Structures are given as structure tokens and as C-alpha cells.
Image (cartoon, rainbow over all chains, first blue to last red; front, side, top):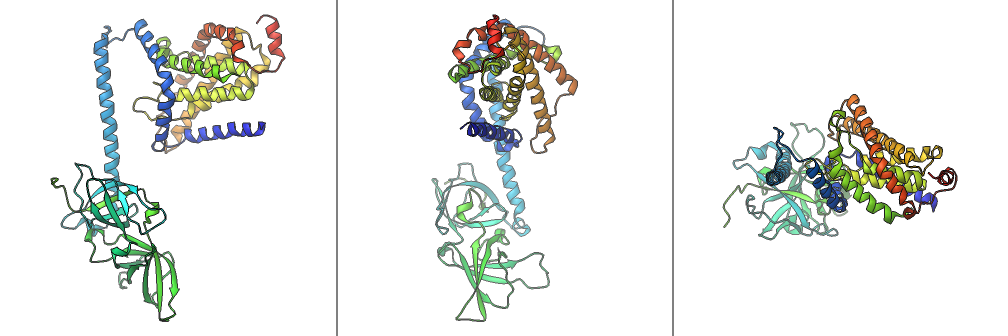
Length: 289
Length: 194
């Protein structure tokens, strides 16, 4: 028992040490813990401040005591500016994330007649067991750009999640690439640095209904597990061509057609693993109906 | 040790430290100020069992980490840990050296309070410097060493002066705390009227 207690203290001190050297961006939880722990201290801190102000009144730069009303007004203004500053910081972080996402899009997308606009959305509903299940996203806000059915939803690292199937004021519904209703998707094989003289190896991926994508290809095509499959489907918007659709998971022989082999690929952005996505839309900012 | 006594006293002391601390700050010593929490940690670390003393130091430091006005409020991000580790280290130093002192004497608590203030301040400065050298922490540039040493001395002296009053009061409440310390120099000091 004694050893266990000693271990507890050691473990707590270890955690405290780790918390001390964590970057500020990952200590958001500390704010919440701090708020809770600070609650019982506040009355005594206020009492102390009152005693302090009574014994040593606040003075301005000229040394003249400041009356409580002025002080209160200044404090209110300070709190307001602090809140404003925090809001701006959150907004700046959000815009930075969108810029990063836009920078990750292929050049062809940025040269399109209508440049794409992105909006970050949190995932509010998904099935952890069914990779073909539709994904629910946080509904758009009033001042957001308009999104439309068919807009592309992508995750970080240029991975395509699927397409917007339905939009409403309450939710956005995404149909993942592995959903059978998405239909065949034309992709190109990418492996390392490609020689521009050799033609792209193209595949037509189809959904197997169990969360995977399959394609039957010529056996002579050199494929490896882990190969990346990029979107080259003219049926999808030009601004997302070249983004990652799936990754080759297995290569299986086909008994009925010995000269062909079956490529089994998994979506590059499986719905089970994503928490934040971006909607790439070219709709622009339009007035709400 | 009775934690039900320790926590209310700690909360009151930490709150008062945050509120009244600036009243007694010495500006020409880099803003050195007395610390009621340091006096409490010294008092507990002198009397309680080693493990309780370390836990008391950790809790006291944790409350200082989140105390209003100590970097925990305003726009600065809260960093949980520096004070908690420093106060634990200070309590540990007291536990190591308490065998050489008469624990129940007010003068001992006064002197040890200064030691706690100085050692925790030193540990805190070391942690701040460590954070500054770590590239991902975005920590502020630490103060020059001379300023830090001057402030540490000021903290220690101011805390000791404050402890003259506070330590006597805490020693009067010793029975409430139910410290489970072993006999020895403690009892000897008690019999001599310390």
C-alpha cells in the first residue's frame, strides 16, 4: 500500500512535469481546471483587493487618487478589450487553418475560373463501425459562404472524405467515397516521383458496399500495397482533382480472369478517424434565401 | 494530517496572497512580496509526515499556478505545474532538514518560511528558464539573474517577517491539524516550551 501511494505521488509529479513543458496550444484543458480551482479563492482574493485598495488607493500617472467609478469603468473597458482580443485570436486561428488548407490544394484548383472557398466544419455525427455511413457536419452559420449539394468535403493532408449530399440549416450530410451511391471514381496511381514521359496509370474504383473500393486491372500493371490513388475523375469538380482518394490495401488474383488482378483500396480519410473537415465550395458568398 | 483543515486554510491563504500580496511588495527589490502560502507550506512540512508534506506542497503550488493574478488570469495561458513542482521541491527540502531544527518553535517556522520562499522561487526560476529554452513553449524571456536573486532574497525576508505573526497563529492551532509525526526532537522542543 505504501509503495502504491509513493508511486501515486511520483506519477502525479511526473504528470506535473510534463504539463510544465507542454506547448501553450495544448494546455486548453488547464484553463478549465484553473477556472474550477480558482472559484473558492475568488472571495478571499476580492477581499484582499478591497483591503489593498482601501489601504493603498489607486493613483493615476500624476499621483492623484482614482475614484472607484472611474476605476470600474476602466476595468469594464479592459474586460471588453480582452474578450475582443480572444475572439480575434480564435478567428485568426480559424483563418490560418483555412489558408493552410487552400495552400494544400493543387495549383489547378487555384487557377480555376471560380476559385474555391473553404469553410471548416466539425463532425457532429458518424458511425464508427460502418465506413459507408453518412457523416453529419455542423450546420453552416449565417455569415458563412453558401454550400451546395455536391461540394467536396476534404480532411487534412489533401484527403477526400466525400461529397455533400444534403444541406440544411440544421446539418450538412456527407456521402463518403465508400458509399455505393457515390458511384465509380476514376483515379490515377501515384508512387514516388513520376516520370512525366510515362502515361498515368488510371483505375476505375468501385464501392464494394463494405467500406472498401475495388478495381480490376491488368495484371501487368505494377502495383504495390500502400500506393496512393489520386482523383482524376472528370465528373468531379476541377478544383479537387489530384487530391488523395484511397490507398491500396491488398492485391488479389482473380480466378475467373488470370490476366487481371483485383485492387482493394481503403478510403484515404476513413470516416471513423476524422473530427474536423473542410468543405471546398465554389459557391461564393451569396445572400441567404 | 487533517486535510479538512489544510485545504480551507490553503484556499484562504492563496486568495489573500493574490489580493493583498501587492500591498506589501517591495518595488526596489524587483517586486518581492511575502507569501502566506510559503508560511503554510513551511509549517506543514515541518510537522506532517514526509508524504503529507510533499502532497501539501504540491496542492499549494497547484493553487498558486491557477491563482488570480499570478499568470493564470488575463490573456496569458495557464501553465499547470511550475509552482506545483517548486513548492513540492521546497517542501522536500524542509523535510530533509527538519531533523536538525526544533520544529514547534515559532522562530523555526519563521526561518523555514524564508527557506521555502527562496527555494521555491529558485526552483520556479529554473523551470521558467527551462521553458524558455524549449522551443515549443513560447515562454517569456527570463529576468536577468541579478534581478531574480534580489527578488528571491526579498521574497525570503518579506515572508519571514510575515511569518512572525502567522507562524505563531498556526502553531496555536497545531492540535487541530493532527500531525502524525514521530517523537524525537519535536517532543524535546515541545517540552522546553517551544
